[in-house]
Length: 64
Image (tube, rainbow, N blue to C red; front, side, top):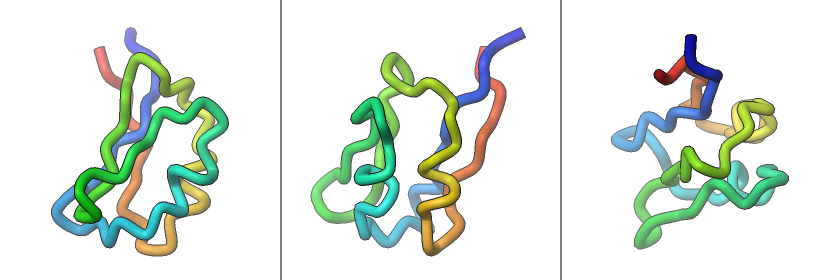
């Protein structure tokens, strides 16, 4: 079974950067001011980004 990781619904992301600021591992980057992107090699599944997202477009999912 895989570990939980943050998954961004990129088509709904408003690229505010709140998630990137909340991430303790710098695993989230804002791409071209359009959407947030998660670096899964850095994501530890803490969920801080989920709580910080004002648009509620980040979910924690089990990735294999």
